[in-house]
Length: 312
Picture: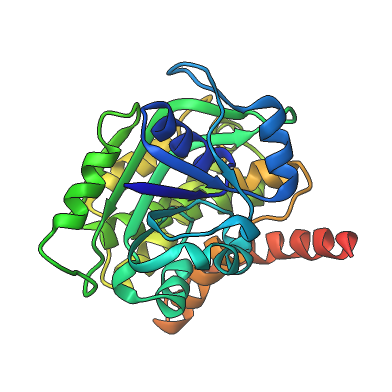
């Protein structure tokens, strides 16, 4: 199976790198500047599960000459539109598109641009970033990737998912073929939005927030609001997911922070509309009150406007 990984950042660089390291037929679609950096230094992975320096095939948008069996989309959500135009020539009639972006807005966009049946559901659970040296750095030990057919988009007799599962198995990260990928994506979104909203609003890690009076209560309220939105759309997080999210969002001394908060601290553009804005819009569509989420959204939007204005 020929695989094209769109993006070589923290998520795509890690999963794609592990696939390539395991001998899979993997190429990376990257921007010219990133391609130059990778050609000079290789794709460097720094991880609790073993460091690696790899030299996978690299493509820029103008170099795609054929279609691929799988396109793994791992760009930031705000970069999706440009990425779609870049990788479109790689999508053929039988190509599977596996996006591991945050939120859910990207699913609708990809299904509209290509075919609904081409787009799988995907959930990545990994804390990884690209450091100042261009290395992919895994920040914690978990590295889980789930994938599956979305409700209403099932095709064939499951052979393509069996092939995908075989591709993903035994390559060095935890993989799972899910029969409930829609629910899984919503559950991740609830947690990620709660984490991103509370850490960006309070400008601190989970441990720092928990340590102040009322900090844990705010985390509880944020999670309750985000969970209520999911429930209104028919995807209430299961009790075990809620319990795990609660524990992680209120853990004493925890250094946990969202990627959105890390990007904010670096003065970078953040995925505010895709993670928080879209969730708030879905709350309004179902008349769900979410005052704390709305406050966090406005707070980060002010920051985002400042970043965009400075870049002009």
